[in-house]
Amino acid sequence: MGILEGKIALVTGASRGIGYAVAKAYAKEGAQVIALARTVSGLEKLDDEIKSFGGKSPVLMPFDLSNIDELENLGPTIASRFDHIDIFVSNAGALGTMGSLARSKMKISEDVIKVNLLSNFQLIRTLDPLLQNSDAGRVIFVSSGAAHGARANWGAYSVSKAGLEQLAYVYAAENETTNVNVSIVDPGRVRTKMRADAYPGEDPMERPEPDEIVGKFIELAKDDFVENGKIYNVYSN
Image (cartoon, rainbow, N blue to C red; front, top):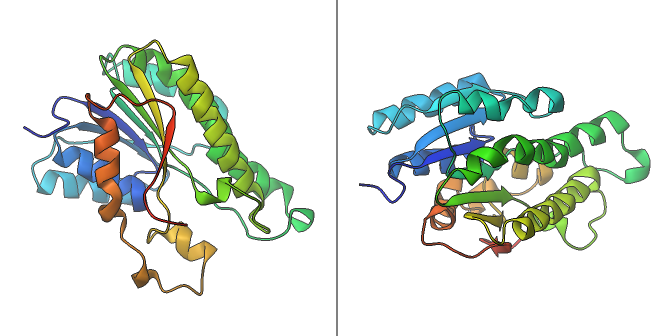
């Protein structure tokens, strides 16, 4: 019996990086994973890997989170198969382009804010009934050190992550008297494609792999984890 045996966990951005690692780790701990991402090939790879170690076959949901209006149907779609969700990991994110706000392209900034912030408004709206049906609902938002301070040239990404953290705090406050707990994880300097895009001159081998940080996500998903509305830093930014 794994730590998350019998749990149903939705992970966004599950086709690579941190989302892939978390989905795989949850499956190893016995959870039924619902994996959502844009990249079908990455989801299929995850499916193969989970099956290779005897995990429950994941439910694969290819979806682009920038399609905000269509996202409203996600909750009812999941509800047609499961009557609740125990764990929701909001991991999917978009970096956009690095550069000054004055020279940014509006369409790119709009897409970043849609994926990183606005989609999470919709995800909360559509998933909340399923989370409330859980005996111990756990929501984990993946943020970034870029949400804090003022980093030149981080533009829409920085703004969207700051907004995401405030969204998480508000949702946590609204669930003080429910069985749903909300956490924020700042993973720090992890070896991901997004990190490589943001720091092209950095040696990725100097950074930990996503598999090395999944322990925090498992801890936050457990029934006996009762803290609500807090942020956890895994590695320094």
